[in-house]
Length: 72
Image (tube, rainbow, N blue to C red):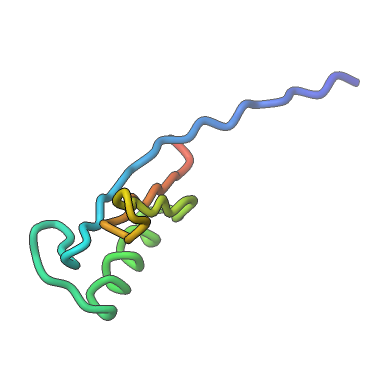
C-alpha cells in the first residue's frame, strides 16, 4: 500500500509592537491585546514566535509577533 504524504502549506502574519505600547497606532492595555489575540485565533492564526527588539544597551524597544495558519 502506498501512502500519500500531503505537504502542509502555511501563511504568515507579523505584527510589530512598539516600545511605547502602541499597536495598530492606538494605545492598548492587556484586555485589548487579549481581544486582538482572540480575534486572530478565531480566524485560525496561531502565535508561533515573539521576537524582542533591543537597543545597543539591551533595553527592549519593541517586539515582532509572528503568527501562522494553514493556507486554504
